[in-house]
Image (cartoon, rainbow, N blue to C red):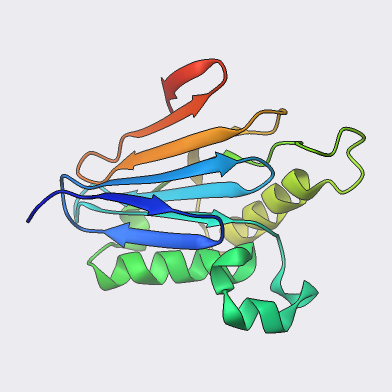
Length: 161
C-alpha cells in the first residue's frame, strides 16, 4: 500500500492500519488531540475534539459526533478495533487543552475538555501514557502509524511525546 499523510481537521477523526501512514492534526488550542496506537496490530488513530459534552447540543452532536469528547472518543476506539486493535494493547497520548483566546480563563474550555476526557478514560479503564496539555500555546500533533511515535510541534520547537 502507498503511504499517506492524513490530515485531521477540527472535530474530525482518522484511523489507519498502514505502516507508512502519518496522521496529523493542526491548531490544537483549547481542543484536544487524542492519539491511540496498538503496536501489535500496527493500527493508529487520531481524534481532534473541540468540546467536552454532547448534551450541550445534541443536534450538533448527531451531525458531528467527533466534535465532542463523550461521543468522539468511543468512536475513535471502535474504528481502531475494526482494524484489529485491542483495548488492552492501545497506547494513548494526548495534547492540547490550552488556554487560548481566553486570557481571563472565563470559559475554561481547554480544562473542561481535559476533565471530560479523563473521566471517559477512567470509567473505561484506559490510561494515558504521555501528554502535553494546558499552557497557552497552539500545537500540531503527528502520529506515525507504523511505529506509534507521536511528535508535538509548538512555538518552542518539535519534540516526541
